[in-house]
Image (cartoon, rainbow, N blue to C red):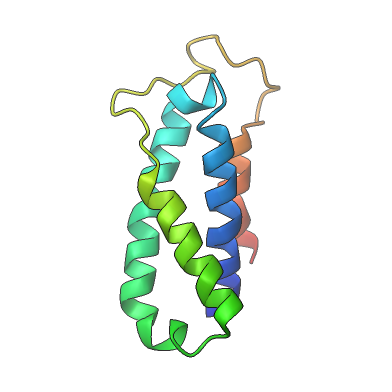
Length: 109
C-alpha cells in the first residue's frame, strides 16, 4: 500500500473514531478500545518509518496526516472496556460493528 493511501486511511479512521467516541455504546466497547490502541501504535510506527516520504508529499496530504495523528492521539478509550454485543447492549445485526468494519478497510487497500 502506498504512503498516500495509508495517510488517507488514517484520516478516514480518525474521523470514525472521533465520532464513535461520542456514541453511547461504542465509546465503552472493547472493540473500540482495542482498535484505537492498535491504530495509535500503528500511526506512530508509520510516521517513524515513513518520515522521509511524508515530508515530500503535497501539503494537503501532510496536513491530513498530522490532523489524523492529532485526533487519534487524543482519543482516550477506557482501559476496562466491555464488549457491548456480548454484554447484550449493542443491538446491531450479527457481524456488524461500525468500528471493526471501518478499521477493516485497511485490508482492502
